[in-house]
Image (tube, rainbow, N blue to C red; front, side, top):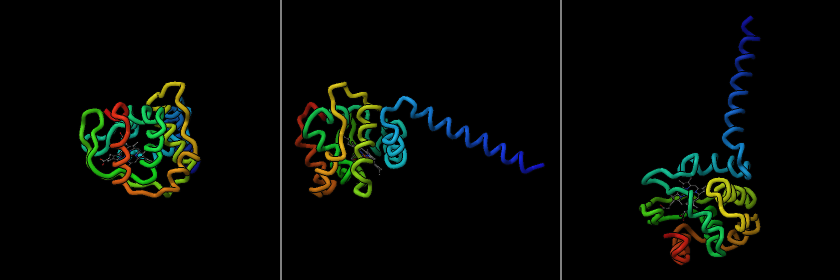
Length: 162
Ligand code: HEC
């Protein structure tokens, strides 16, 4: 008697979880990137990439701006590969923590995660080209650390980081 009942309950729970997951990402052009973001980035940047005060900045504006500029595209790739250490200002607020590196994730996975942020979260304009695995590979070929990533960020045009 109890067995079918338990199975039924499991089915209901499994279906509910599947529905919750699919509806959260239903409108995403980069569902794999959304899953990668949830697994690797949401712990610090929040599930909707809106940031966590005094811990990690929102990713709701800068990534789309970076993606439209050659040096900004390099900045995105090097940030996910090597992390970002030390003080930065985002939307007028100070952050000074240590983003971890993600060299353990492959190029296609990192490109998909960035495209989810740039296009699904930030709604970058149509002219902006998606990041590719080759963009990530180009930065992987030149290892630096999170301090170097912050130095490169300082060299970006002011309009990208104001
Ligand atoms: C351990 C927490 C942590 C995790 C995990 C993390 N980040 Fe970060 N991220 C930060 C912090 C903190 C900063 C700001 C740097 C600082 O305060 O030193 C940052 C900065 C950034 C920036 C730069 C924003 C700008 O305005 O220049 C991007 C882009 C970014 N993160 C994307 C990601 C993505 C994508 C992932 C997942 C692959 C990720 N982060 C995972 C903590 C984290």
